[in-house]
Length: 112
Image (cartoon, rainbow, N blue to C red):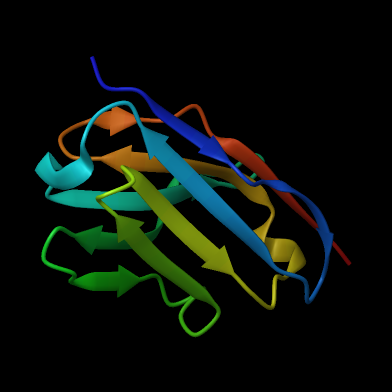
């Protein structure tokens, strides 16, 4: 059983930054895809960014240019650097690893 544990969420003012981390209970070398999703209050879960083991990266249009996803397989950790945060970025952010592993999520709240 793989466990993913997110950390780094919190309350920040608009324009601020946060760095999320997702620590895996085993080596992440075997995860072809790792990703960050988010679920805003009252809305559906949406993909924020993904990264493959080969380094291919995709971002949603809403975060492109502001967020940076990275993974450190030597540390079994996935990261999401979030800059220029907006109130609409407020959501629970969840870590995902293929195939089908999810973390519990970390709350990010951006105040206007």
